[in-house]
Image (tube, rainbow, N blue to C red; front, side, top):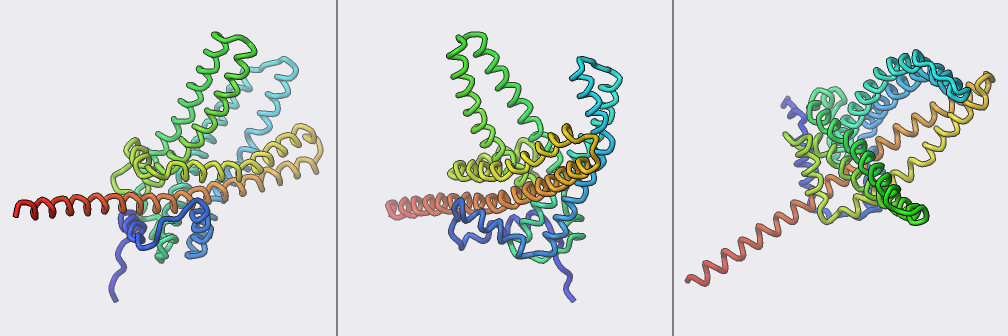
Length: 323
């Protein structure tokens, strides 16, 4: 019996790009393909979903048990104009490992989701064990670190710009400028998020391409399809709004019904459901951008082929003219 060739990101990338026989799909087509993708390898996608959802919900549960009571205590003291620095230090000590844990779980979930989506999209049959053993973890980890700094730097720049406008403009004009900057900043942030998401997909799927190179390649791949990438991310962000509302309702209920056991169970249920939905929407986002990556790959290959054909025609004409 012949042995199966080991799974690798380069082989999947080739499979993704080799589907150039089909025409490029539009915005709706990308979502349609993303919805169909899990059904092409249901077992692998189900296993991936459990690997993504279970660690995240466990971390949220542990955070609710250990950090939430201390956060409530600090909030109550703040409302009473009292600040206990010992409580703040204790909260920082508790939150630090949770932040690291959430980041690790996030990178793990993003990576296996992209791999599983790429395999399912190309209709390949790979076990979860083979998938996990073939992942090059260094690439998405480094790229994720780059991506994590983008919103921080961006927020600092936007806040600095708004503060500068407050200093140099009058009150009425300042309100208008702040509103305009807020809208423009939100739109630009959605575009940056689409590039960052595509960059993470590139870092997983392309060999020896990670960090700044992956983000640079994401910009190059999306040439001619930037608007599509922007609207893909915009729609995905809009899908997340009900989940954020659910988180807000849970936190508000926690403030109102903190002493009621029924209220506590309701709060936990809301938070649990919101966490699962958040994980599923996040997974779907990377399935969508895995499909988008394959379309960008086909588009870039098509452009390269056109350039090669054009150069060949020019050389042929040059040879004929010499004769």
